[in-house]
Length: 456
Image 1 (cartoon, rainbow, N blue to C red):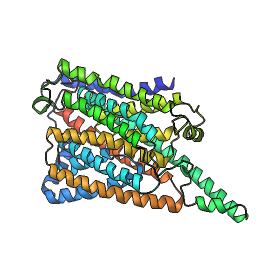
Image 2 (cartoon, one colour; image 1 turned 60 degrees about the vertical axis):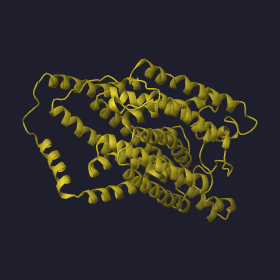
Image 3 (tube, helix red, strand yellow; image 1 turned 90 degrees about the horizontal axis):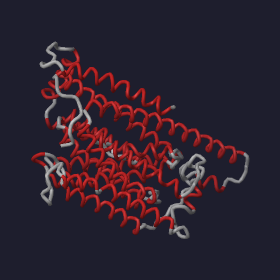
C-alpha cells in the first residue's frame, strides 16, 4: 500500500506536466509574452558574461570545486551533482563538456580517497561488497545512459528531485541516529570513569570512532579481489570499446559498428549476461571459502546487529547487487556518479559510516575511471583544463579526509561522515533541481518538443 501511495504522488505531477506540455505543443509559435522569470534568467546570464572575466570565473569555480570535493571526499561520494552546476553556471561550459570534466574530477577525488584508505591507516574498504556490487553498477550505468537519451528532460528532473530529496531525508535521519548512539556511548564512558570501574579498555577505545569500531581491519592487501575487480572493469570496458560510444559524427568504434544498429544492440545486451556471470561466480567463490575469510563467516556474524536484526546469510548478500543496479541506473540517467546514490542505501542496511565511505569511494573509482577513459577515447575538449580541475579535486579530497578523520579521532563522531553525505546531497538536490528546472522552463517557453525520444 505504501508503494502505491508513493507511485501516486510521483505519477501525479508527471501526468499534470504531460497534459500541459501536450497543450503547449499545439501552439506553433512560442509564447511571446515576456515573463519575469525569463527576464531574471536573462539578466543573470548577461551579468555573468559581462561582469566576470574568464580568469575570474575559472578561479571562482576552482575554489568552489575545492570546497565541494573536500566535503564529498569525507562521505566517499564523487560530488558530480555539485561539480556540474558549478562548471555550467560559473564557468559557462556546456553540459557535455561539463560532464566530461566532472568525470575526471570525480575520478581524481576517488583516487585520493582510495590511496588514503589503503595507505593512510587501517583498511576500512569492504571488498566483498565492492565485488558483489561492481558488475551490477556498471550494468546499471549503461542502462541509465540509454534512459537519459530516451526520457524527456522534465521527467529526468522530476525523478531526480524526488529521489534525491528522499535520500537526503533518509541520510539525515541515519546521521541523527548515529549521533544519538554515539552520545549515549560517550555518556556510558563518563559514568564508568567517574565510578572508578574498569576504564582501561574504554580509554583506549576513545581513540577509535564510537561506531564502526568492531570491524576487523587488516593491513594486508587482497590482491585476488583487486584482480577480480580489474577483470570486471576490463570486461565492461572492452564491450564499450567494441560497441563504440558517442552519437552521430562523434560515434567511435574499433569495429566500425553503426550507432543503434543490430550489432550495437547485441553488444549492449551482452552486458547483462556478463554482469550475471560475474555476480554468480563471486557468490560461489565466497561460499567456497567459508573456512578462510569468506563472505559468510566472522564478518557476517559481526554484522548481525548492524543489519537491523535481519538474517545474516549469503542469500542476504544479493541486496548489494540489487542496490548497485538501481544506483547505477539512477546515476547514469541523472549524469552523476553512483556513489551519491549507493551511499545512503548502504547506510540504510546498517553498514557503519566509515566502512560505507571507504567502500563507496573505492567503487566510484572504477565507474568514474571508466567514464574518464571513454571521454579520452572520444576526444575530450580542453583536456589541459580538465586535468587542472582534476588535480584540484585530488588535493581537496586529501585535505577533506585528513580534517574529517582528525575530527572523528578527536571527538569520536563517525556520524560526521553521514552528515557530510547529507550536506552534499542537499546541495546537489537544490542545485541540480533548480538548474534542470530552468532548462525545462526555457525549453517549454521556446516551444521545443518535450516528449520521449528514440535512443539514437
